[in-house]
Amino acid sequence: MNFQYWNPQIEKMPRRELEVLQLQKLKKEIDISLRTAFYKKRLAENGIKTSDDIKSIDDLKRIPFTTKDDLREGFPYGFLAIPKEDVVRLHSSSGTTGVPTVIYFSRDDIKNWADYMARCIYATGCNKNDVFQNMITYGLFTGGLGFHQGGEEVGMLVIPAGAGNTARQFKMMQDYGTTVLHATPSFFLHLETKMKEAGVARESLSIKRAFAGAEPYSEDTRKRIEVLLKVDVYNSYGLSEMNGPGVAFECQCKDGLHIWEDGYIAEIVNPDTLEPVKEGETGELVLTILCREATPILRYRTRDLTSFYSEPCGCGRTHRRLKRITGRSDDMLIINGVNVFPSQIEEVIMGMKEVGNNYLIVVEKDGALDRLTVKTEVNADTFMDDSRLLNALKEKISETLQVSISINPKVELHESGSLPISEGKAVRVQDTRPKDL
Ligand code: ADP
Ligand code: ZN
Image 1 (tube, rainbow, N blue to C red):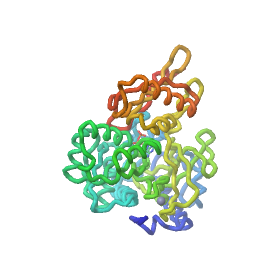
Image 2: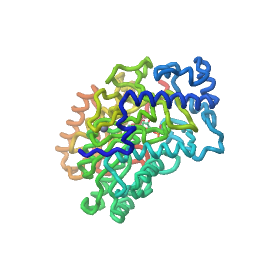
Image 3: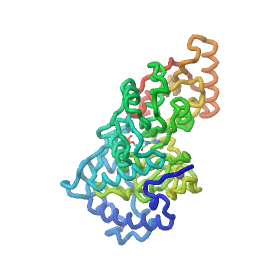
Image 4: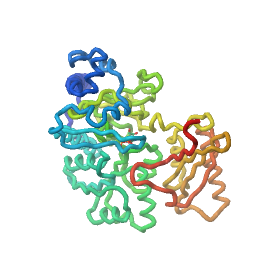
């Protein structure tokens, strides 16, 4: 494979040098953080008065974790480290799990972010000849502008399409000869359903690559999008607390996401004990940003579950890889005492070719017990009128799920395109059980 690097010196930097650079940047970030009301107090409580008190990356462990609640408590300006007149933009999280948090950017912060994004995009083989249709929400959400700036930095023609409206999306793809797409994985699946419905021929499109992220999805879902839309799909990970997209991204080996370690220090901890996990074990990702002066955030508990690869990547980049993020530690459902992650269900159903492109997990109370219902769409070319075959499919899904999650769910089959889809991140779970039991 012919790999290309946006910043070869940094991307292939020997690890020893990379660690020296990390320490340098960490010390700078500590000094920046000491200008915020929050960290000034937090660091002093832990015996850190200046960056001279940090002698190695390991010293980072002396600093307590920062949580989403801390960020909310600091709202609106508690985490601001530069004069307000030097702030040029703010973004805030989409608020999937409650009150949004706000992040400020200086002019240099925006430049840095665009540069990390360009690295990601370029690593997938894109270049300035590409036409990039960014089909994700613009606005406070970081996915829109983050990818937009990165695309421009690479020199691609960027179409700020925004999310939704599949008919308009197809029209733009045809009019401008789009070669690269960005959306959530659920939107890509929806797009394919709509493409069939609208009779858009794949040959009328020039798309080659697609970036899919902002929500968890399984390897089977990636394959499904790749086969159905005939594109190369790359996984993109980020969160607004760490700028947004551009934190970790797949290279052309498509086996794990490189996390840019000159911009972020990554730790993985056991979410219960908060101790580092052993190499290769799954745990919660904790991130420290090294490339932002307006809003420093140290040891942020992302809640996202992943693990490190220990082997180096075939592409020659030295920055470590993260396994596909399977979900958040707070996504876990407890159903009649059994722990289930929605990603386990997705893995099973998206691997079945008779199953369509959308699904919904419903958990309800049924007397004293919990009841799990898995609603899936059926592939458009499958037998919606043959009840014998439909029943056999229901049974197959239910039995396979039983083996994988140790719960026997009720399975409901729905026609292709009939389950609800959301414009932003997909809402896959409806848990209607009373909260305080
Ligand atoms: P919110 O926390 O309100 O959803 P963000 O827009 O900042 O706001 O979303 C970041 C979160 O989205 C991440 O912490 C992670 O849970 C999820 N996410 C983003 N990209 C991916 C990905 N490629 N795989 C799995 N989850 C992802
Ligand atoms: Zn690689």
